[in-house]
Image 1: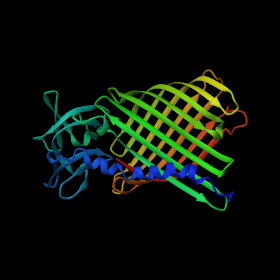
Image 2: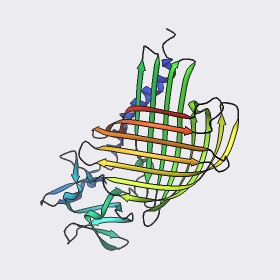
Image 3: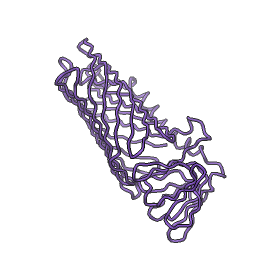
Image 4: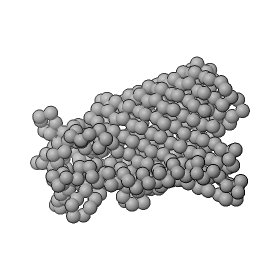
Length: 356
């Protein structure tokens, strides 16, 4: 029996995570589902009218919950106008934002936004995203995100792979707060295990002309690279160079400070540069498909000649509404790792998750 992995050590937490995956959708249905919230009117270019509860516009689809047809997705190009009393954040393709309530418009293919006591007309095709700002609800009710998990076991080699990850977001008018957690465990025998985990928080402040700045902090652990614990704080400024319903591309740069507790019993404090890029491509048809690529480059400043690179690519395919399947590739590189540690760690992860 010595070839079997230590199941009790890991599986209790994993089963708990799977139970959570089924829970968010019930919570989401309880928020904002009062009868009066189904008063939004969406007028289509073919003359039809849909009445329901607007949830969001994302990836070229307007998600509307109705009393008679459950949730429907409407192609944004087929929408002529909208009337809603919800307070909305409207993101335009030029990177600017408008805030207000949608009123009836006399001009076809244009939305009229009641903003600061005046009505502003915005062409329908100039809008990239719409998010309700639920100002009357508590902070906890306004949080959205996803959670996912996966497990793989090979009896012949005694190899056990476990991954659990979650991302949470809180959107407000001028800023967004994000929280992410990721854990990957690889076990071959009880004495030969490798852990990779990170927890991070990010504050993004939206500026004019597609510009923004970010402040972030986090904790990292990667035993393959000889890192027991890395504490990191960073600040960057950047711009969205591409913002359409089907594509988004951003680049930001700044500085990062970190403290590393290494497996060789050394401690390293350093200041690094930080260059980040993120690219997302969406397939607008249902089921939704999303391809995301992220690259973080840390050129050394106090550690001359050091270079760290973190990258990941994720393909996400929606199975049914709010339930998805992910295929991810990650790579972590450090040209000056701890003594006796690897310089590169990479892997492929498959998981199933739910969004809420």
